[in-house]
Image (tube, rainbow, N blue to C red; front, side):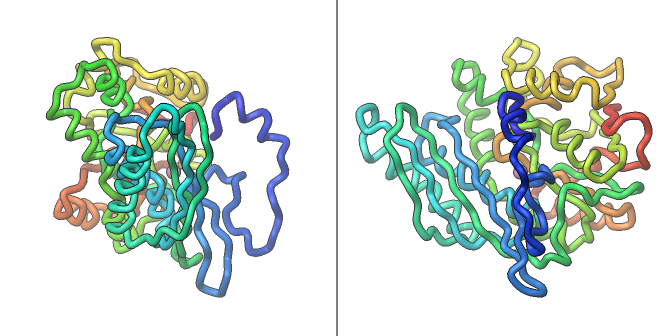
Length: 327
Ligand code: CO
């Protein structure tokens, strides 16, 4: 789901065709997948964006965690990374860039990813990101279109990073909250990926710019099912609701709401601040995992043990009227 202004331009581009192209960009999945052997495929993704926090090292960490997340969302193992750098040398000292890249390296090391190169250009604004390549067994990979009726849904990180990073920019978030949201965004989805594979997940995606409801919609539509979200079970970062109630809202959430309005159905009783958070664009959000009901308890226990969010936040049914129903 590209931004609206790009969707039109991209709609006319023909997808590459090749018998080994298993997942291409027409699938709206987290990463592309290309078979290189009977039980091996490359899984590749790219992402870059302007700083979302002031500290360059932390920005690098968050960007790296966000970039490898697309590989984890497909059940892949990330292996190599290329840095993508746009940098204004007239506005910032070179050390700022060193710190960004050092921050990214620290997270990549934790993920077991090796940096093999990169490319940098001069630009008016800082932008940084990474292209990640990983490996996945095509028979075991998870896409965002495999959810089955009867499945239970998990979300492994709390929501609210869009609202809270906006509050930080407006100096409305205290130090403890700032620290917590940075920790959340820079934590890897590595363990969540390992656990979903171990506990027979049917489908997964990571929650990023389209918010929980946007990514849930893509999963539901791609799978031909209805996803019911139990809004009172969705994990939230502390103060996210309060900050939403103070009117700290993101443009991204408004765009997500506009795109989804006629595609999903929301209970009339839903708290409007909570509703806003469900549309809130996330940076480096958790994995949304769809798992057979029989595996839900064991996955929940394993997530809990790993210190990850572990409540069932929804369920999958046969398609009924709307792709996503928020209760
Ligand atoms: Co993704």
